[in-house]
Amino acid sequence: MADKSELKKQILFSDLTDAELGMMAQKIVVENHAKGKSIFKEGEPTKGIYLVKSGKVEISKTTADGWKQPLAILMENHIFGELAVIEDKQTHGADATAIETTEVYRIKTDDFKALEKSDTNMMYKIMKTMARIASRNVHAMNEKLMKLLISY
Image 1: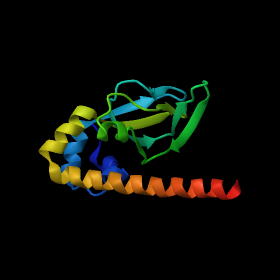
Image 2: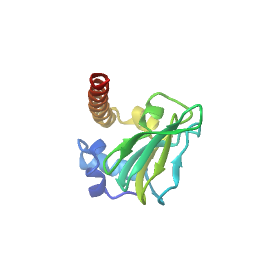
Image 3: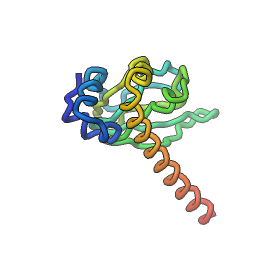
Image 4: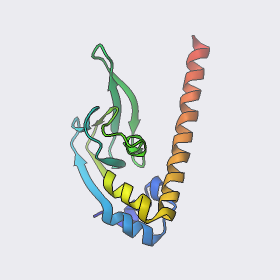
């Protein structure tokens, strides 16, 4: 079980009350991953939403000709795996690898789905935060794309 005060530091849970944090703490699985170890691979079953407590995680895809293409480096407070859960995907669409010793919190898919039904107010707060994060990511990607297009 995760510590409530540590969970409060996670951006995904920043709007939750102490009671809601207590509920989430009971659902969280804490995982440690050694440097270079896979957290999940593209095509593996979706296990849940991950939150980086410490360390770094590389999200990547392998191209059709076998080249690994890094998509993002995630650090403390970042989330990943959420798209597969939100989109009801059965498998992950990318690889996640610990690029240094990494500790993550994981909310199991089934627990997340159950909370959607049992505590809609708390899930509204979490989903609103996910939407803000997604929006920020889209804006950042748009800026990168524009810089690439301008420099071409």
